[in-house]
Image 1 (tube, rainbow, N blue to C red):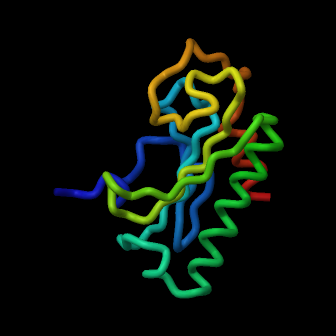
Image 2: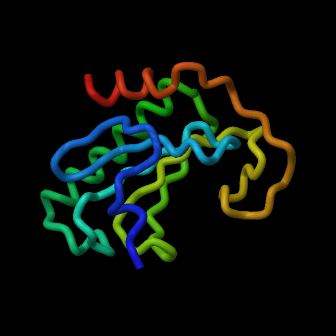
Image 3: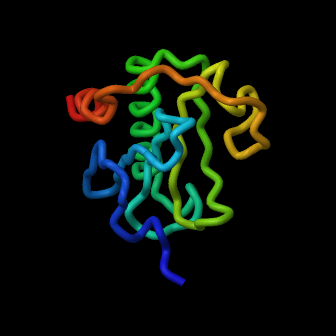
Amino acid sequence: MPCELCAPSAFPELYRDDRLTVVLVTSEPDYPGFCRVIWHDHVREMTDLSPSDRAHLMDWVWRVEAALRTELSPDKINLASLGNVVPHLHWHVIARFAGDAHFPAPIWAARQRDGHVPPTDGLVRRLRRHLTA
C-alpha cells in the first residue's frame, strides 16, 4: 500500500528543504492552525534519524509552533508524533482554542460542541512569511 506522506501533498506547502516539508492541513476546518512537519525519507521513528537530523526536525517543529502562536494567539499548541495509521515520521503541530470543537480533549476525541475558531484570512501567506524569514 502506498504511503500518503511519501506522495506529493495536496495541502499548501509552507516550507520545504532537502530533509522535510511543512504543510497546512486544510482538510480540518475546525482546526485552521493544523500543520504537519513531514520527514522526507520514509522512516518510522525519531531514533531512525541521526542526532543532527533529529535536531533539524525538532527545530522545525518549534519554528512552526512559534509561527502559529504569533499568527493565531491560541490557548494551547498540541504537538504529536503518532504514526500509528501512517508509519512515516511526521509531527502534528496544532493550534488549539478554548472554544474549539474538542477542547480540552485531543482533536481526535469525541466532539464536545460546535466549535469557534478565530478568522484565518491570509494564514498560508502569513505562516510562510514566518517560516521563510
